[in-house]
Length: 299
Image (cartoon, rainbow, N blue to C red; front, side, top):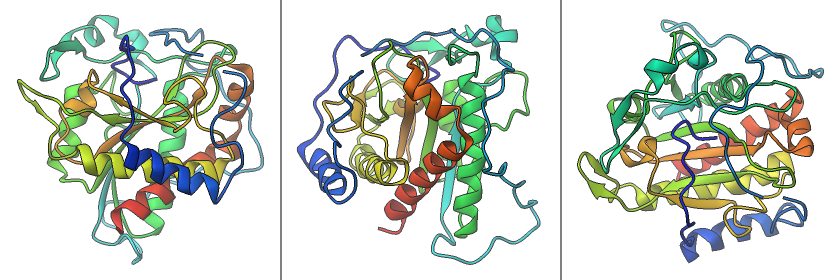
């Protein structure tokens, strides 16, 4: 669920080129890419009953610690590329409701600094999920030689705010920025979707230079996510493409580098929750994102 998580009243149509690109990838991988037969919509700003509840585990190991700043990265296909990973929300946001409710400028208006995120019914918080997947994603990208930055790493009391998250990617001159999330929709709504920036210009926002490149990044991630996880695109957002365009998210509006949000599944649906709380599936999700990012930055 995006940290600036208002759901717009209408969904914008996907560009035909992007939808076609995803369709082509789907046809080469998993049947049923048009979406799962049982899914809906709706996001909760704070549905997490227990932010420290742990997910079920499998034999998949916990990601290793990242190399120290002085340790050289391995040489690989992504050497010389910079990727910023933005783990959605912060596990301690709920302890700082005053701060995260402060309004910040998103170029076309204002929004809350951040939100708490959602959770599974059993209490596995989205903020914990996003950090876990982000760590796995970082390790996969670093193994290919990429310079990887996280907007936060459970190392601050709250936030960062949505405008700062965008600024981190901008100042890093990132080749790609991916914001990791999970949705908080109704039971029966299933599948993943990738949120792309709309063409927005106003105040401090101008996405004109990144709309096309972000759509390419998003389509590649969506296609590889299907391959790696076996999950179908959302059956409640994006018309079966797994792609959705929004103009109300500050993290996208304020970005000057290619950026997308990835909603990995619906935490409030029991079937999706079973995947999201499975460590082996989270590794697959990270792999799908890593493969999509690599395909994009390598051109």
